[in-house]
Length: 310
Ligand code: TXA
Ligand code: MG
Image 1 (cartoon, rainbow, N blue to C red):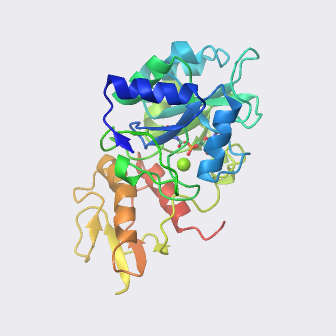
Image 2: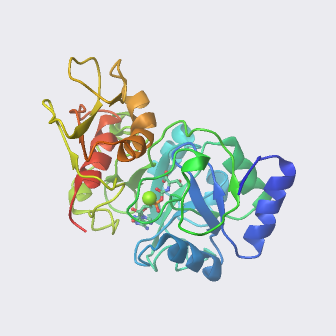
């Protein structure tokens, strides 16, 4: 059920959350399946509905840095980054406070917490009125494409309370930076580019992205269409629906951004992959995307979407 996000419906969503149920909340990145982050039973439902392995921890969503400080230890980089980029598509992995009242299932029993403050008025209202943090993974079945509009939210046969929030402005999940070690480390490229973050905190290690030990479940096939996907294609075959980028003479079915704008491409990526997955073409292909700025996150998602590794 998709509902208008007016006051009464936000109150209804809060009532469901208080009862330990899940609701779908729009964010600027993707739609999230949200539950009370302090309630083990509620969190259990997220893993079950998404068919997500329980060793893969969730992101904890808060209203602001003030609220976050109830759950995570002080950190100088976090002070700088949250000051500039919160609310926004930036998740910080920080040491968990011993006193933090968070479901250990949500954080997969780790001594760190991945936390972010989403920049979407509906998410903000929900967090404000609920008063407690919300754990929220993307509102799709594990390994499938994340939803960037309310109509794309699909979790099998579950009839969910979905707050309408329009088209997601960023269209890709948040960037995840681990600040719990000696040096900031990128765990997942996302909605804020590394280049911009580095202007504020200096060099960020990128080593762990490929190994992704810290963010389990990130190596495998993910964000995946049903059809096969070929990357960096400059000559497509007849049975391939081609997803373009930038000005091109190739025969493209859809174009992520005809003017070669990486923000526009990020916003369109998941939606266009979905549409092509439903097109008559038996196979999909995508043109090269530059590995800079948001292009890093786009290439990361495309590589996982194309992977056959489960
Ligand atoms: O944009 C987003 O971040 C969206 C919206 C809904 O906020 N959420 C999202 O959640 O992408 P999810 O569950 O799809 O991705 C969470 C990622 C996983 O890769 C997980 O491994 C990682 O965060 N993660 C969570 N807690 C962590 C921790 N303590 N240390 C390292 N990685 C962690
Ligand atoms: Mg996801």
